[in-house]
Amino acid sequence: MTQEKTKKSIMAQFCLDASKRSERLSLMGLGEAEYRVALLLHDAVIKPHHQEIVDSFYRLMMQNSEFLAIIHQHSTIEKQKKLMRTYIATLGLNYMTPEYFEGRLKIGLIHNEAGVSLSLYISAYRILQQLILDAIPRKSSKREVLIAYVLKITHLDMSLAIDAYHLDDVNRLENNLQRVTSSYEVLQQRQNRDSLTGVFSREGVLNLLTEDIERYSLGKRDFCIAMADIDHFKHVNDNFGHLTGDAVLHDVAARVQRQLRAGDIVGRYGGEEFLLLFHDISQHKAVEICNRIRTFVAGSPVKSNGVTVPITISMGVTSPMSGDTRDSLIARADKALYLAKNGGRNQVVEGNPE
Image (cartoon, rainbow, N blue to C red; front, side, top):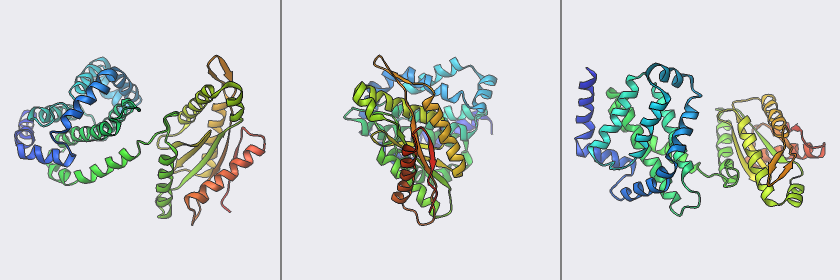
């Protein structure tokens, strides 16, 4: 089947058939009432932040070798940025019309034709989705409504792109849409971030730790945890003020995040203490990464509000053992952290299972 015939087949199957569009939108939880949320999203998020979103998207995508090769062969970054700006400018507007479905399906066809793998395409959607979510004002009274809408509309767009990639598997994919929706609901629940540092909140990181323990108990995934605490943080607040203390927390969190591997997690456990989750890793390797983090944090002072503050952290590392609960695992890491503090600070101590 030629590309043109393929396009016509898709449009006839998904765009012009009102019942199919209605079924798809219903699965996504999109109805006429969502139009007002779409307008709010554009006024409060897309229009003020579209350039930042596009620039951040391509900065992240440029780290992928497959993406770089495709751009080098077919296009330029500036051309792609222009197309992305057009795409974002129409995101979620008039989503019930056949024209919207047609436009999203064509985007999928174009990328498939250019040789973009489906895995890269889906990953790119996830990155774009997160950038838009991050741009939603944290103090907005409509934040939860906007988050829900972004998840729904990006899910709709991605599902249409997948249809364009796998025409022969459309029926199977539609049957799996509910499963995909459930996975996006999990992602939505994980949007719980600490407002000061930007890393996971206490609740968010503890929920992820609970999942890790459950998987470990089923023999599906090894992991390690670390408790990290900023040394002499009370001294920072007492001598330089809480604004400088907040700057130190934000900077340390960013430094820790920068040294983690893809898939590892950091959350603010409380005050100046952070909880780190390392996946598919030995305790020995986790200790190596923690020492790298510790050295990076201590490598340069934090500069804020006209003052320069030397910073170090202490860390306690441990791994789970049979029968561990979330509390027992954290207690063992905390005990190792206590030893690191009493041993002179600015060090990593292992808490081996007893």
